[in-house]
Length: 148
Image 1 (tube, rainbow, N blue to C red):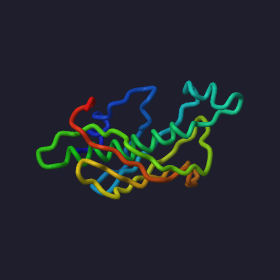
Image 2: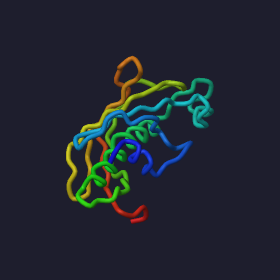
Image 3: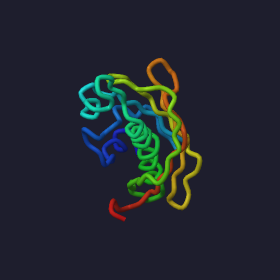
Image 4: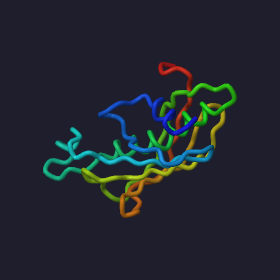
């Protein structure tokens, strides 16, 4: 699968799509970027008068780029495989720096393992200055159906 096909298979749309570009992808990992639009609704209340991107949104961004894109690639590249859906099962993320409205982040993921339909990756998010914003591990199950 190529990058455009992977992006077309993502099961998200705005305002919950956190992938602008998929820069690299192969059987070992993925790299992509997203810019947080200052008009995103969650900035109105997180935090009042001092908007910061919520950690759960940073985690979702890493999951969409580093787990879902890679899972679609791996399942679609399997012999005779159709791209599957990736359901998040676990995360362990450490947060080092805030991400403010308008910031561009880059996510890099490395596959730890993909077996028995479970994908486990190490992920790291950096800001435009190359500083690590957050990092950790993230895992999910690849399935053929969205509801089961």
